[in-house]
Length: 258
Image 1 (tube, one colour):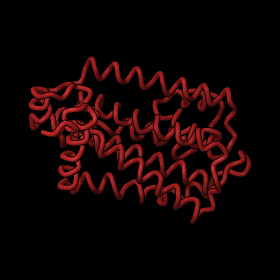
Image 2 (cartoon, one colour):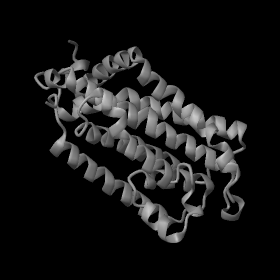
Image 3 (tube, one colour):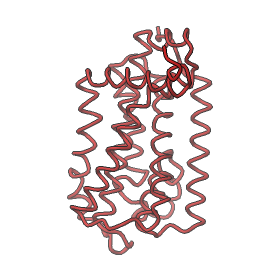
């Protein structure tokens, strides 16, 4: 093994390449990660067209862009990683990796690396498509969009590890991931912008795990997010990330559930 591979970054890259090869062999995972996020935004277009977007200063392009990135986070990253973590655990891959040089955080990060990179690239491509095809315009605060995307990628990866800890088999991974997917789609502003909900409901939904990231992405694009609201979203996203990391360190299972 060369010197580069013995560094934490080198070890995670090597594990990421191996995980990418395994991902390519799983047809269901490939469909979930690649094609579902591309198809879903256009499937909800009729519902978006019926919303009163102009009254809230929104456009079809900006709402579709936020939805596209949200679907990419949920399916290319979160759902696919739940299955990957569970499958590697049940195949004793994670247990064997712990006997080598890799630390626990390196194993989880290396396993998540291909899905996170795929989610990032897919989000960028979907953003370009929405700008060119749906006239979404340019982001008013691109730094908030980037920050929201990064928070979303990290949090989805950590939530996937946490969900995997309560998932018994790879076959049941899609079922255990479903609550987070459905709640996030309906309550985090992915399908229905929070501006269109009643104030009381919106105030509750803002504290869902993915809501801060989606709020930063959407608000950063339209420019209607004040500095105070942006800071609140960042702090909420940080709180969820820290809490999720703590939960993974405490409860993640490295051996098959019996």
